[in-house]
Image (cartoon, rainbow, N blue to C red; front, side):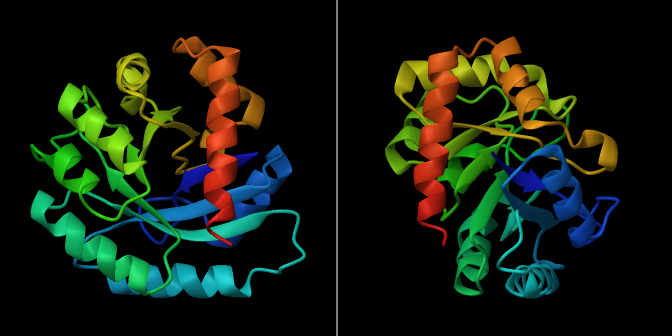
Length: 215
């Protein structure tokens, strides 16, 4: 089981990366990504720190930890250059902080981030038909989240993905110990928003294939 959206005290989380990994392992996960918030002010430090941490994480550990980043509240034209910088410096999982209904995210963030080298569009809010089609065409995951506030539009994202064939991913977006729910609880988040068991099975199959490219 996986969670590819987790924060540490490298940005606005409460825990060290090592404690995040240990707590996810304790909950039954086998793969996580550390994806702290970044913009031009801190991306070099975030990338260097998380890549080094993941490089030194024991290879025989019961949990695999991938280096990631969440590009957050950027002027939309900055997604392409910052995603490129992150990828060139060893980041495996690149998330764009999407147009959630509970934050003043810049207009066109969804569209312009989907044109960048990202893997996941987090909490994309009331994502448009055109942007959902773009995500489907580019093979970028749209996030269904357990995070309070951001989760208000989960059902809309699911319906859009169904209509246009976009891939979905279930993520936790944890910042504190109490945010780290079990894999079964995360699956239940999806079911509560209308996902069928067949759709959940497909999500996990898609993510499994995706993770094989991130070795």
